[in-house]
Length: 199
Image 1: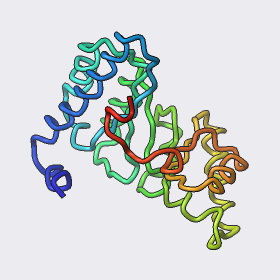
Image 2 (image 1 turned 120 degrees about the horizontal axis):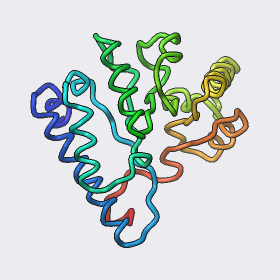
Image 3 (image 1 turned 90 degrees about the vertical axis):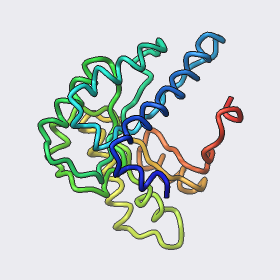
């Protein structure tokens, strides 16, 4: 509830920066300890798209901790609407030019047209959990499988990595793999955990 209300306030940007700094501080610490670093996904909120200094701010924070840009995946939520598509595309292209990865999150739940996928400089298409919920169970329908198969095929043919979100059972994992999905995430593997437990 706190976060939902906060998103309507100007200082959401500061909250975003605080979270980013905690992430990159941990990554810097792991690097100094000689631990293997894995990519981290970071949501790019709609409100920040209109910040003229966004790209330099994000790069400045990340570079201050010496984190490799290739380890950062900025996620754009498809369900968010963007009034200025040109601005959004400019920001995504600039971030990608600087070596960051770009993902479209929650694909299939929002308002973007399919034609926009051919313009967006994204690396990964993340299929929303709502599609995964319908498979490998009593409620599975042929239509759900057909749609999911075509989304996975579309992602691959456009050159994107395809990731399915929200897998909670082994049966869902196996079904997604059979359909050709490359990466799968969800509670089947782990629920969100504190930093210390992750380490």
